[in-house]
Length: 355
View 1 (cartoon, rainbow, N blue to C red):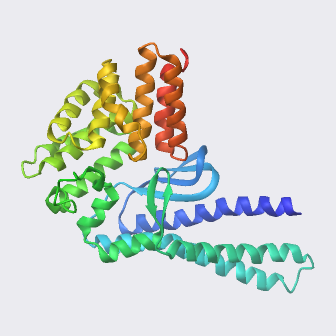
View 2 (cartoon, rainbow, N blue to C red; view 1 turned 90 degrees about the vertical axis):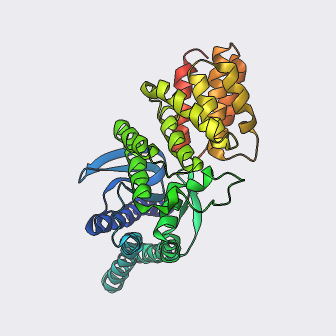
View 3 (cartoon, rainbow, N blue to C red; view 1 turned 180 degrees about the vertical axis):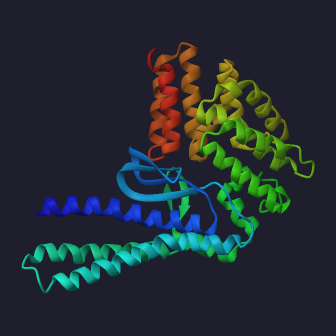
């Protein structure tokens, strides 16, 4: 009976997360956003299908979910975002009331008390999920720090549209320590931030040509300061690193070199340039730039990408055992991040047949 209960709970959690994310999904559609990807669970992807031209992914462990949108309409932006964020927890609350009513009805008509108690337990699970989702919390999910629905609502209420989009884009990683305007990116121009958000969504959807077109258009804006251009250039160059799109390699060489000239003190920029050098076959130069980024205290993504590319360089330099060691470290540091896992797998595939 205990095994049966664990199985019921496991299946229910999948169902609950799916319903929660569908709350976000359909609310987003109603308010005019374009959800293009819904992730349900964590770990290895086990199922994928399309719903209204959007991709729905199920992973092996029912532990959280996320709904991605590709556009941010500026009119009533925060009001729409708040509705979208509340859509998920409201579904949990609805499931709680439905299960409670089922429990109350069948408790008077069924003899199998264990079955009834299972329904009661699942009702409490839904209520706890509702509470958990509306509390202003943050956690690591899909390799990034993700705010709960309640945290997102509070951010939408307390931050300006510009600040909120900047946070969604993760722009703070590109602020130099010497920069006194670390909270202001792209002159706080909402339309530019909107284009950036759209470009990131195009990259996530692997529409790289569209993303490059949008980002290169932004680069022509003479009003952007150095750091803003560095962000755009680095995102462009990272298409090769994060997605293995080597048809952009020659462009990435120019982009990463330009970014380094503009801001050689930003570690992410150093990591991008070093990785591109290794893709170009300039192994020793690349390793020299990446080695300091493998040390503790650096961002997880910088450590993992650097370890991966040093492994690739070491293989082609004839240091096969060292290549194995670097890949092992990349796996250990990047555990739990699907994005980093994909980079590790790609690099491993490139050299695996020779190791």
